[in-house]
Length: 368
Image (cartoon, rainbow, N blue to C red; front, side, top):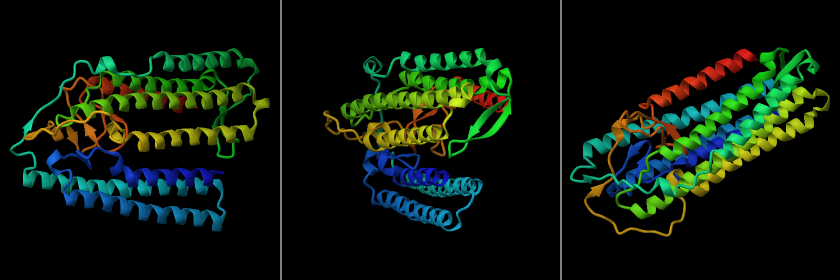
């Protein structure tokens, strides 16, 4: 079962990494802002195709080798996990290496050929944008958190009836394979970890409301409609992830409280269902929506304006991956390379959020 899980995840990651350029804005390529006058440059088109071809071919070779290794050697689960993780990391290193090469090349072309020279940079400010957002209300995220708190309290109320050894990890076959001594802290570790994840997803949903809209000056109506839809879909994706995590972690918490009713087959089924829902939702999100909603069909189209471009904010993007802008009040910003959102490293709240994540990880590790 571990082999099947790693094969599915590896195939998914290879597909997403290879075809990522197709899901992104034409004006943001390998972390570099490209003005509209250059998006059809044949060098850029060939660069994106070459990236997809190389990552796809190498990824399929790695996937084939991993499948062959599993079928021929029938290795134990520990080795499957080790080589499965190695394959994941290897393909990620490859894709990021190609990204770095292309990012540097594009940045140099843009600088040497002065792609933005002679263009007027204009920023569109829409004061009614936030009023028309259709994000899910906080209650959708608070209710699962209350359920987790209730399960945590219930687990503590059954403390005297719990076994002396508390499971802290479950293998791919659904069996608990790691335990710790029973204590008030160890009994609370799983609900605490779940609550931390739920809180993070709720925070992202709230932060999207305050995130500035990147409406394109040459395509104001189209990009505005796509931006609104992108945030709506993002909110629903966060909710689906929240519910899925709540159900899986809630089941595992109940299996600790009632170990005699625990079924390895149900645990394995729940794990697979969790994986299918998460990966399926992300895949749908990438294909249907795309970054910034660029793959969504819209009803509004604009007359092209000549001589104007969107603000070139490359200086705020470190290597096209990390956004640092102290003057931007947005905590979350849209990724330049990838699907979804990233944090503004120039905002102090972002560092507080990262600190809370680190503290949560340390606490969960200590509790277990």
